[in-house]
Image (cartoon, rainbow, N blue to C red; front, top):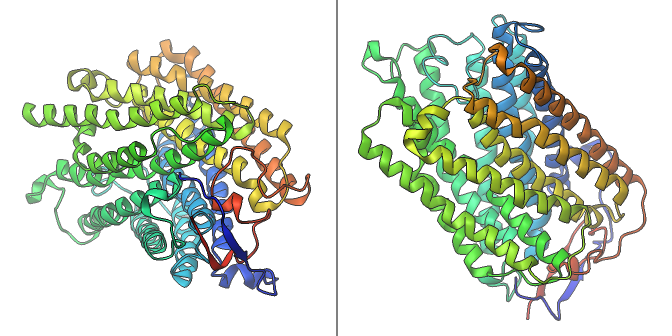
Length: 530
């Protein structure tokens, strides 16, 4: 990002700080309050989804059926996926967007503050409804987070209506959040902040917001057709009535593949802020990073059927999707190259945010390489629906998206709370997470190559030892996250007062123009960027 020198910022204390009491949170239109609520909500969902993963790993600790019924096991895999995707990762990025975008572009707040409040407050109701479905007769959704028809239509429990309604509400929340981000970035930038001076976090969110608006209605269409197939006698996905179950997969993955990039593009923005700060160098190739992000977003619309190589597509189509999938790795590779080039000959230090950023670069790249393997059509026939796929997307989403969110929390906590976090606790959290996450997910590659199918509560005897190791890694990773929770609460309550710019190499308006903690109202007069 171009240096912001000579910033004239008048941060306004507004003669009053934040209002007090419970209603502050219910009625707030302040972007910082709403950002905090999103982040706390996403952490609560992260722990909830993690608890479901613990049920899955406890059942798979040994072969045979130990703890839960197969039907409940399927409910856990379904709910774990839905909660982690829609309840943990996406709201966390929206919380970061709310906190940071106005401060980074010199805006007084988000452009549509009341809609911002509304887009947060409908989420707890959506997830309460989704979780309540577990207590209905017949149990909760048990058809996988991808809810393929006919599993979600002919064979699903009665609670499917609750599932459909909650997904609609999540989608509405995402679309409102995305509109808000776009309008804010286009209309509230400080004078002199041209598009090519925007911090990369703002750019990645800008592009993500367009993706959200493009694909959330597709998801809404898919769940509505599931609803009418199940309850109103239509047969969109029922071959007996002239429909086609494979049609569901096309519609779902046309949403689902851009959705994967919705969950990773903001990570690229976070890493592009942290790596230059701790390398004490400008980001290498800013413009190429912006164009690479835009190309990833564009290409994400033409790769959806690589999830469907085994459905009997024509060979021409399989080749098309194979080459497009390999093509999307090029702009992703550009980003990794630029981060490494930024670190090259920099004066690097290794505080906790940088440790998470480095782990992100290495482990996300492993996820990228296994994705390239899955892109090769004939080989995918062997890997499809095995634990190799589970290993692949967890490397992308846990050591990718989740690690970048952790990195962001450590990096901006001093700015949010006004206190420095405990570096010792941060490092402990990092090393526990790093070791356990690899014990958890790396052996899954070999389970998949050995032929162990995913989404099953029982498995063949030869996979027993590896599954035991994987489960131990899972429990260790889950417990490590409580170190993070303790560290955050400790940082909010006490800690060394943070300077306005705690990281020597950090650049951007939020560091140069605002004190720590950032005041309740950031910019009453927009700063001038020269």
